[in-house]
Length: 480
Image 1 (cartoon, rainbow, N blue to C red):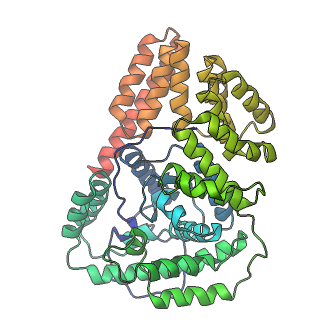
Image 2 (cartoon, rainbow, N blue to C red):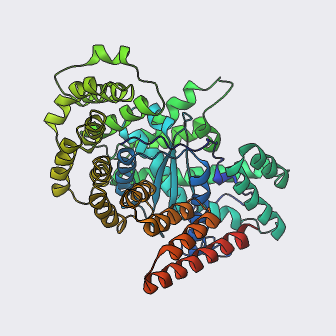
Image 3 (spheres, one colour):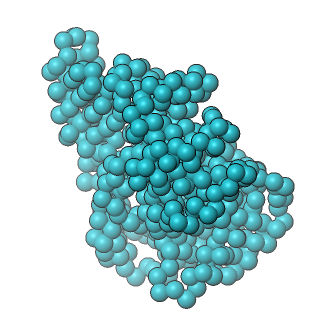
């Protein structure tokens, strides 16, 4: 499924650098049950995280791609299962940027730039970055950083938080405000960041091994990246936000060498995800280089090359050619979500909506809870003017994933196709709320309230309006 809905881009500033402190290096891990409690409770951290995520949705070019989102979620779930001290559910998402970076912030939110997977050479390398970020969150590094500001005045803390928010809206202004607020404390900030990086390295390696990945992925990726950009005038964001030294790489390599390594890993889904990013997002794949690589052997690498070419052809509106290229892949693995997604777009581009519906209905009967299949099925139903089917599919899916922006967007279209104005406005309100646009959300709920004849429904909508007004006040109270 393709989305052209990309918001203005911005560069995320690392949230691990959002506070400074004077603190001695610690050798033991903290008691996570109390770490950061004097500054922010776990529940308040979740609230901060939710509000930050709304800001990011409104400003960042978040990738609305169910295939890549499902892949990232699966990898994240596998790693989080092996993490200790998990206090809240994790949310993983992609930012459509060619930069090589990843970041974590309040409440279990972890973002990955599309440029990151394009730079990695194995799934274990990608997973090592994710495990590192999960460790930052599970150890509450941001909050612990804030807790160390024992000598800072309350106004300094407020200014620091405000600067980080400003940085999300306008990176240049945010960094200027942050630099002014925290002037004179750079060395303490660097030292403190190193402590957290070492801690995240240790915890992340253990998580990586328990999840079945190769621990050598961590030193391989960061070592190669550091060497590649050793004398570069401009280094990748990830090396700025995650300072790497030779001593740190050596320490990580020695630790990794002492850990067990998996004999063989299935890299097929990773290769397909990377091929999708290279073909559709970072735009490094091209037809001329892929054509000679096509093979009928259908090895994982061959499949990824063929898959990337099919996407390129489809995006160039050469759907018939794309179908021919994709056909061997779909025949060999008809339930593969990567292939189903592209084949759906091919069939819709060729005007074969009924064929797409039949394919997706068969897949849905086997995997009724799978994101890629469900959202493609709903999208095909809309293309075939079967709004009732789309509404049924999406309402059921949203019971399990209520914050899925793509599902809500499709549901708005389905209600609009039905002519159900109150339901359309109510769903649109939830979309606005997820982007932190509370005024627009409340206005849409008022429209839904006005167009609804059921007294029970009107009361429910009024209650939701009051909830959003409370959230708006909470945002104002927290960040002024």
